[in-house]
Image 1 (cartoon, rainbow, N blue to C red):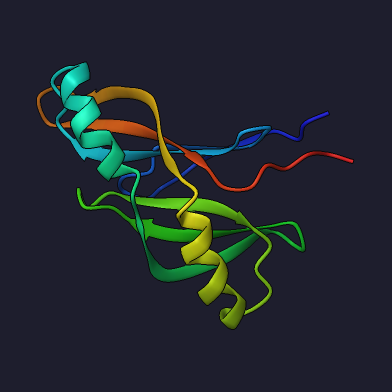
Image 2: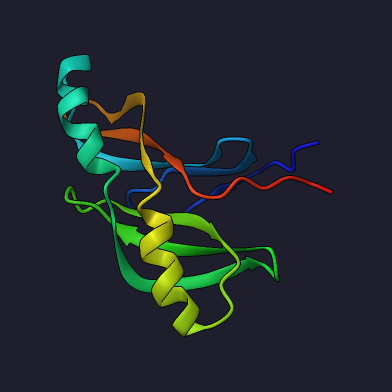
Length: 129
């Protein structure tokens, strides 16, 4: 059985994060306005390429931590990467964990003519025991 949870984030950029699926986690990142599917194909891969900003925290003790990251559209997201034990561990796990995320083909407009989000898939998969 898969453990599932969703968390509404208060950060600009990351609208919804879900973790626990067999595919890992999904993070929705701001990408600026997207006008159509062809435009999404051009913008979303870059929106899902993120850079760790040095911030991380534990969400479930001994099970899951998240790394905060930004993309080229100035979107900010919180990405599950598995447990992080200390700052030195974060310096390794955050960059490598963030590299697993890529665009999963989904996008939608959040503010007409101003902002759309791209759905990024990756990270660890978590399953209940």
